[in-house]
Image (cartoon, rainbow over all chains, first blue to last red; front, side, top):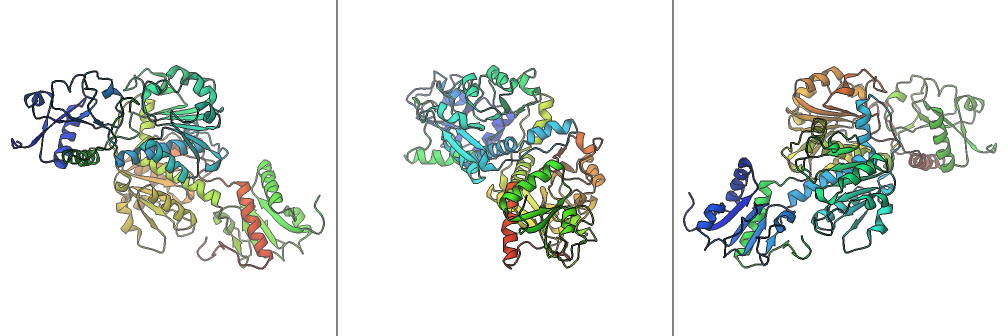
Amino acid sequence: MNAAGNTPVLLCGNFEAQEHQAWLSALSLALPDVDWLDVTTARLRAGEVQVAVVANPPLGSLQGLPELRLVHSLWAGVDRLLADPSVPAHLPIVRMVDPAMTAAMVQTALWAVLALHRGYFVYGQHQRQARWLPHAQLRADEVSVLVLGEGVMGHAVRAALAAQGYAVTSWRRDGAPLARVLPQAQVVVNLLPLTAETRGLLNADFFAALPRGAGIVNLARGAHVVDDDLLNALQSGHLAHAVLDVFNTEPLPPAHPYWQHPRVTVLPHAAALTDERSAATVVAKNLRAFWRGQPMPHLVDRVRGY
Amino acid sequence: MNAAGNTPVLLCGNFEAQEHQAWLSALSLALPDVDWLDVTTARLRAGEVQVAVVANPPLGSLQGLPELRLVHSLWAGVDRLLADPSVPAHLPIVRMVDPAMTAAMVQTALWAVLALHRGYFVYGQHQRQARWLPHAQLRADEVSVLVLGEGVMGHAVRAALAAQGYAVTSWRRDGAPLARVLPQAQVVVNLLPLTAETRGLLNADFFAALPRGAGIVNLARGAHVVDDDLLNALQSGHLAHAVLDVFNTEPLPPAHPYWQHPRVTVLPHAAALTDERSAATVVAKNLRAFWRGQPMPHLVDRVRGY
């Protein structure tokens, strides 16, 4: 269907068929002069394929492409991509930074913090019992929110919460010690990248350092949380509520205690879905810049791990 | 306890004892030179009492005070106060407009619109069934929100929704015909005053004029809604969800179908609780201005009914 002279680009990911088709349509619209190849057809044009657009591709998908010079991830999180030992270490990897996705993340963070602050999850419990019981109302400036992560998402969430009047601080791994900020944090919003250093960060020690009644919002990666420690902290009443969008196993298994826990809100990894239309525009802009020899934005730092 | 020379002010409302004490403390702190009288003690100093601070007072509470020159409501809504035929028609009535309460209303409206837009109530239903099912995600600018009411609350809510990128319009009773704006409204946020003209406005005709799948957020008065019509519109699937903070009977009776309806979210008239500390400061500012002979803000227009 495509003319032979088009630029070949590998498109691969752990897509379902329908999802693959949606990406192919959006990318073809944004970059009409590209031949979008799969892992098999890319091998047939191995001498020409310089660019791969990927979304957690199956292990080894990028092997056998000696001319590969750029990998563009369709996802913002690249922890699974970096865990593939067959991805050449020298290859520059561009992370997805899409304003539409950032806006979606801000919406979810704002909704979760508003709900924790104003006790709307508690009212949800009361509703099932037909209980009419208004509770005390704090002003936003009386609620301290700690945002973990100072990347594009962390900054945007922090700004949106500050605009609503919350007392927001943010934290990055190489900044102030966590022990200094946790005792003041009534709500924690996690937007960290998943790296060897941040894996399991939200554990028993972390929860114990928070004030009694604190709430947790995890919008980053399931592996940031030690599930048993979170369940214990909720069970003891030390933590009031957790809003979880991401899990150590996804989809969350039907028998997992989070599903029926009255003080856990489960979202199906939907805090910020990638919008194919918007993301394809970002990819097109970045690849055109690459082909013109311009520098790439949002390059992954392999040492930091994100 | 108060010196005899203090200015006498009537304080009366349908308070519970603890609530009365909280108001008395906050007002005494804000206006230390006032003798706060109840209905009985005010009659004893009827010749001196020029000001009444009220919160839906029992019918007839303001009778027998010939020198009364100002009524200050502690609530923003004055529909019940105006329904008392013993409140002299010439008396100026100041409505409560408290920035802390406006901020609380904005929080609730924003939370409800975000939840309707992103389907968080649907995810709540899915959670109880342990269903992992991400659904499509619209951008905020693809969601049109209609705010009913252009008072202080309506303006603040409209601005906050616009700042999140929603396609917001607002409506007032004497503006464009409702029939022109309803077909575009995917979410309706009601912040109208309750008057003879707005009572029952959210009825079968209103709901039928909305697009299929619309959501309703009622933060104003229960009597704006015809409950059977709303239940029918939800039942037929024409409306997707309703967030209701106010009801024709409050507290909402335990057997009311709203409580257990999967597509109704019930709040216990808690969208914006009056903060005694903040409201007392507003009252103090207004009464001091009154005693200096300055004009009063937010005076009720008896003809409009708010």
